[in-house]
Length: 150
Ligand code: 5GP
Image (cartoon, rainbow, N blue to C red; front, side, top):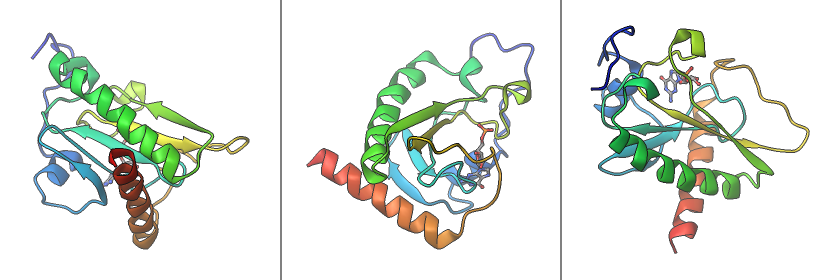
């Protein structure tokens, strides 16, 4: 780990670590040895997806650069699929570090949010989406990923 002396250590009881261990469910769109992507349960727009490296780090500040090097191309792949799946005009990428930076879950993750011209974002952690909507949105993204790979 790099110098992180002024921040708390990684705590593996966080919700994304629990998702990674399969202790709680998520609506996955993709998983490989290094990363997982799943739907945000409180989406700021339909299709809001989280990209999560499996390697434990609290956020960008303590992450291994080798993990970050794999994370960004993967984020691009998910962003392209999300754009296609939701016929988005654009994509917002967000990544928060520490409470003062807006972070609420302390395992590194990147937000991928489809955007449409003239449509604002809902509030961060504004409200839970219905499970059937998350299932349908995850299916759309999985299908777009398949088409990208074809
Ligand atoms: P942060 O502020 O840490 O960047 O964002 C954490 C994100 O995780 C928020 O957008 C929030 O809606 C989402 N989130 C919180 N709890 C859960 C959960 O149990 N499952 C999923 N899929 N997302 C969650």
